Length: 55
Image 1 (cartoon, rainbow, N blue to C red):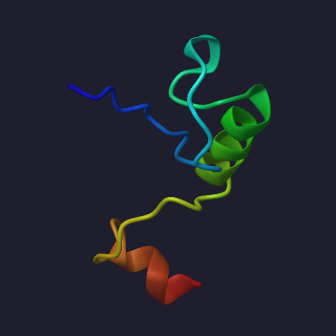
Image 2: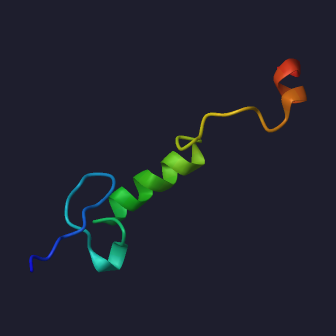
């Protein structure tokens, strides 16, 4: 049986338990910035269609 080392989703280096699922605070912070800047969004209809027309 071979052990599979899980990788950091940002830089693909091996994960560190202290920062799981990331390898470092740098990658953890980069992920947080992505969330805060709406970098992770699913395509779809607007939640509030009326706001689309006003913008």
